[in-house]
Amino acid sequence: MERFFMERETDLELEKQFEVSDVAKESGLMIRIFVTSLLKKELMEPDSEASARGEDESTRLKEILSPLVSSIRATRKAKRTNIINFSASVTKDGKGREFQVISYLGPVTKDSEEPCITLLLPEDLPEETP
Image 1 (cartoon, rainbow, N blue to C red):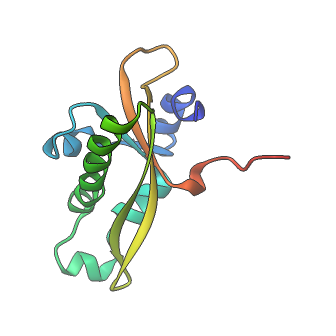
Image 2: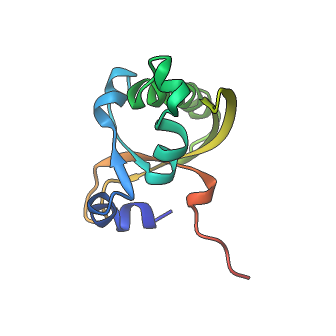
């Protein structure tokens, strides 16, 4: 998970990560929020059918953040962890699809103590080598 804050500045420049803090604040999250390019592509970018229904990246992000907020509240009472796994549903090709999402609480950069949350998909994690 260190990769997500160790390389954040470069990832932002290369559009491998995106900051979505402004929309997150509208959902009640006052911490900085970043998403990976894969999560943005798979969950946030609406297809043509979703666009025709008026969905955009902001509305879809809010659909992802709502279960995150619920998961944070539930997990905070049960255990102290910086990783929360949760499910988020979005419409793809006219059908509702559920995705597993990982929320990682860590520093914004390796030289910063400012906390942030990075949202990613399991496919974003490097494969383990035996």
